[in-house]
Length: 302
Image 1: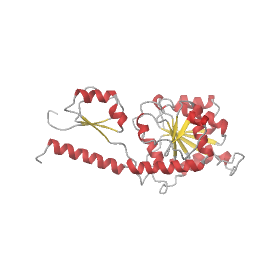
Image 2: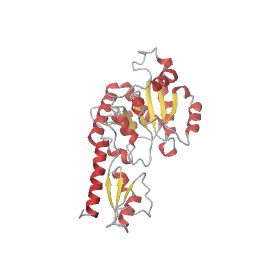
Image 3: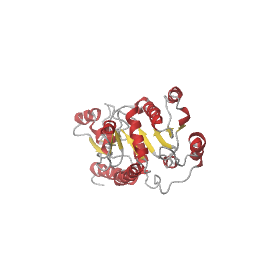
Image 4: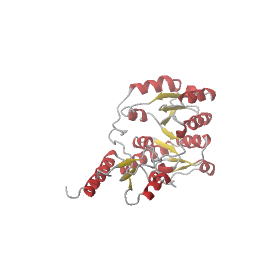
C-alpha cells in the first residue's frame, strides 16, 4: 500500500492471517467471505479492504464425459483388483448393475473425514455386496485407513490409488458411478465435487458451508420414504446426506444403486450446474475484470 500497489489475498481456507491487509479478499463462496476471520479483517479495514467471490472453475472440455480419453491403468485396477470376481454377474438376483464403483477424492486428513467413507462402505456392503470402492488421494491418515479396511474386513473391496494427475482424473471419474464427499467441516467450496459433477458422476455429499451454495434444493420429482428422508434428501443435482453417520451415507448410495434413472439424472443436472456457473473460462473472466478494475482505480490516468 505504501507504494500504491493494490494487493489481492485469495482464501485458501477461512483463516486469514490478521496482519494481512489486502486491497481485495477473493473467496470461493459466500461462506468463505462471510466467515468471522474474514469479516473481522473487513470490519477493521472498512475503507481499505473489500471482498469478492470468485469460485473455482473446471475445464469443461477436459472434464467432459463425451470426450474423455481411455486410460488402461484404471481399467487394470478395476478389472484385476476390484471387479474381476464380479465380471460374470451381468445380471444378479438383486436386479441391479454389478460392481458399482464408489469413489472418494481428496486428502486423507482428519478434516476430510475419509474414515466415515470407509465405515459407510462397510455398511453398504451389507446391503449390496457387489459395491467396490476407490480412494483417490493421500495424506497422514493413509496407513490408519488401510488398517481400518482390514479391521472392517472390507480390504478386498477397497483400493487406495494415491494421487492422480489432473490429466488422469477425468478418465478415472468416467469409471465411477457415485462420488461421496464425507467432509463435515470448513468446506469453503470443494473443487473435487464440481469435477465429479462436470463428468456427470452422481454426487453424495453433506450440504455444509460452501457446498450448500451449489447443491440445489431437494426435488419433489424423486420420491423417498420417510425412513430414507431421515438419512438423505434427493436434490436436483446431488444427494444431500442429512445425518452424519455411516448408515446415512450407505442408504444414500444404495438408493442410487437401486434407482439408476435418478443417478443418471443427477449426473446430467450436475454437469448443467457446472456449465452455468463454474467453468474455468468464467473464472478467468472474473479475475480479468477484477484486475482491470483495480488497475483503473489505482491508475486512472493511464
